Length: 108
Image 1 (cartoon, rainbow, N blue to C red):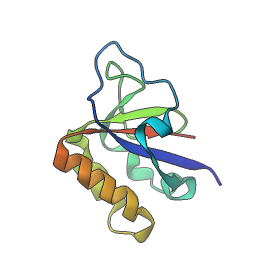
Image 2 (image 1 turned 90 degrees about the vertical axis):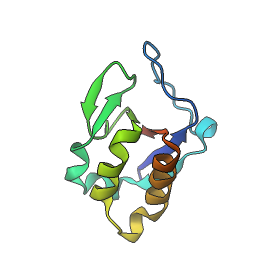
Image 3 (image 1 turned 180 degrees about the vertical axis):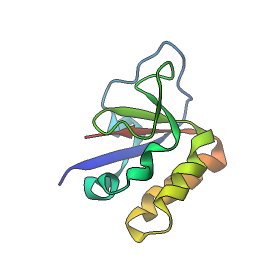
């Protein structure tokens, strides 16, 4: 089954730098089954960035890398709600929000 991976970025992304590399071991990612991501059309509502903070977008880059700023974490949390399928992701997003950190998402 296809997976999406998420993790907290300990260092904030910087302008001019691309985050194109797939580095789940660097960030110690958690995984979420694609079925749960694909089912959430509302995941297009929050502000995010595509591969670099120089390219703003909305929601998740389904097949690429998304940088999710701390200011968008509450909106992301509202979309996933309290469904048990998202428990680990919800905990990660809450931790990132509490620490004012970006979250990196690796799409398919």
